[in-house]
Image (cartoon, rainbow, N blue to C red):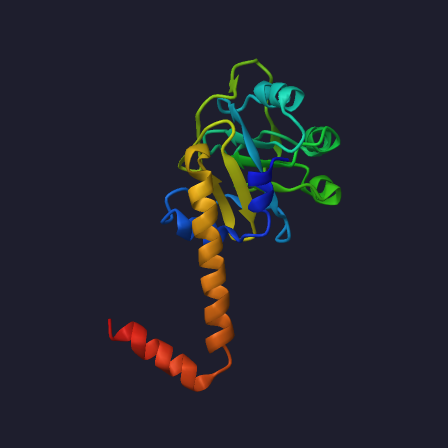
Length: 205
C-alpha cells in the first residue's frame, strides 16, 4: 500500500467528504455489510451488465494486493454479483475490499470472513457468466465517476472517492478538517456556556 493511501487510513469519510464539498460521495444506499468495516485502497474498477459477473472474476485475477474492487453493476438489486466463495477468493488474494453498486449474497458466510463489503444490500439470485464486461475502465458507481487508481475510503458513514489528480490537496484539507473538529470538540462539548455561545455565533451569521 503506497503512502498516500496509508495517509487516509485514520481519517473519517465525513472529513474527506467535507474536503471535497460533498462531490465524491457514493450514494448513501451503498452501505457496509457490518458497521465496523473500514476499507482504504486504490480502485480496481469493474463494469458489468446486469446479471453477469464474469468480469468480476477477471478483476479478482488481475487486481493487486491492497486494491479495492469497485463494481458498476448498474444498481441492480435482483442478481448478486458475488457470494461468500467469490469474496473468499478476494480475501485470500489480498484484495482490500469490495464496493458494488449492486448486491451480494451468502451474507452469513461473508460476515464470517470479516472482509469489508459495501453494497446496496443482498439478494438470493446469482449472476450468470456470459462474459460481457470490462475492467480498469472509468465507471459510474453510486452516482460518482471512478477511475482505476483513485483512492477509495469506506466506513460506517459510507464511501468516498478521491481522484488521483487531487489526492494531496484532499489529504491536506481532510487533516485540517479533522484537527478543526477535534479542537471544537475539546473546547465546547460538555460545556453549557460554550455551547450556547457557539450556537449564538452560528445563528448571528
